[in-house]
Structures are given as structure tokens and as C-alpha cells.
Image 1 (cartoon, one colour):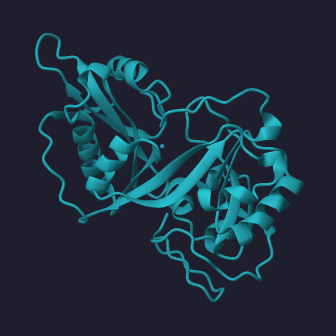
Image 2: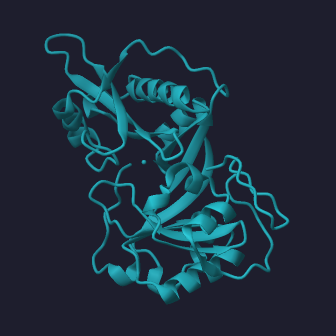
Length: 287
């Protein structure tokens, strides 16, 4: 639903603060252990969001290109997901090796800059493109949001009712493991029904990640999504120095809101089911 300080001794420093940069071109692609993956790859997403226990296999080429089998982020989605980061010159050999030595994953997420080097058996069907974004504590003042209520983990039926109506493909539901809290806005008046919700999920590094922000169709255009996102961002930055989220690149209103809250794009991914595993058109999910 990282960029903080990993350094490697390959002549090029890797900092989790800028994602994955261009690196030396002489590093051969090779399969590595989980420990080698985390020590050798500086990708921000890896260090913030991917649990070590969930990585089953990994491949690396220097500090700038890596691919790993790990957990997916969408409830009910495929569990055999490969994520790949790095520049095309290095990531191409990494993916070629991975495809030659392992089965086809249910889904592949690859950095957009390197989507053209995906081997034929792993090329995606009807892929979608999304940004993995991060905000830092103190970058942008966050406006008060008195209309937003911290729901905790209570009211699961109400939360799911909003998601069913406004964001049925959400990457979080009321019972999603790792969700720390839900925030929401209630309509004034009888019953005070929830009309907007969003979740803050715990990440392996102790930071938070926004998921499942949704506003009922009849309540849109009133700034409720911004208010919920602001409140969740504030809660996330109370946990750690950074907070993250994922958003589709064609969701212009959400991108504008997140930019105004200080979020910056760290990785842009192209994701989708691998062609060798897909015989039907895949529906694009909603984050």
C-alpha cells in the first residue's frame, strides 16, 4: 500500500534517501541471500516496506539493480510477486537470470525506466503504473484537521461499507494485517455515518504507509480526501521521520494532494500479471 542510509563498499555509496541510482556496469548479475540483498541494495522500497522474512529468493547486480520474490501488497492478490529495481543496463541481466532460474511470478513490479528489459516470459499483461512516494517530517506544515476522527480499529463494518462503495479494490480492509489505525470523517446529523476513511499501516522499518483512502462518491469535492490524508500523514510522522504511500500515476487529484503534503516520488513502477501466467485480461486494481 527505502531511502535511509544503506552503504556498500563497491565504489558507489548507496543511500536510502534517493532510491536506486546509476552504478558501475561491470557487476555481474547473481543470485544472493536475503542478507546480501539488504546489505547490497539501496532501494528505498526494499528497506522501508519489504519484510526480510517475506523474501524467498533474490538477485543482485551491484548496489543499483535487484529483483526479489516477496509478498504482494493487495489483499487477495497473488503471493508470488517479483519486484525489480534499477537501471536497465544492470536490471536486464538480473531479470534474465531470474527468469531462467525460477518459475514465472503471479505479478511483476518493475521500475518504469527498465520495463522494456523484462524478458518475454515475464512481460506483463495490461500493466498499470504507480508511484511509491515518501514525505519527511518537517518538510511541509500540515494543516489542522478537526473534522477527522481517529477510529482506531473499531467500526470495521462501517469502514468496509465505505470501501465497498468508494474503493472496492483497496489495498487495505478493516481486517488487513498490519493496519495500525483508520481515520475517517462522519457526516453531521442522524447516525453520523462515515463518508471518508483511510488507513495507516505499519512497515517493517517502523514507519507508516497510507492505504485505502476513500471518499463516498456523493461526498467528493469537499476536501475530505485531503483531510484524511493529512491526518494520516501526521500520524505517520509521529511514528518515524518518514511516511510513504502508493498512488496510480493517472490519479491527478490524489497526486496534487500528496504533493501539497510534501510527498515526493522515489520509485515509479509498472506492475501487472506476467504474460506466461495470464490467459485473461487483468483488471487494474485500485490502491
